[in-house]
Image (cartoon, one colour):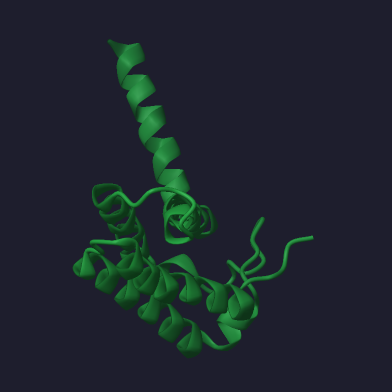
Length: 146
């Protein structure tokens, strides 16, 4: 019994440590966003058949992750250099501009879910808005890898 309590305590401590690390938190959100976008990109491009249920589920996942982006909590002062991050120092120099970009992303992902695209044409319209947000934000607020 003591081993079980110890194991549960260690697991809780480990997960709270990850949750206390803003770099790890924001990377997890961005990874989930990328996975959701990638899962529907081929459909939007016409490379895979349209599946309304699948598309809506991916858009919901994307929106749920987007809504978790709390700029103040995930991008606190000091986290621009505190670890393995590609977040640009421009975030901290232009926090209002970054917040505006995040708010637009949140609004557009919520709108994509509300639109519930019923065909590939509707998906392209919504996917275009959302993916454009990703691209422009990464262009402005993310360091280039390599």
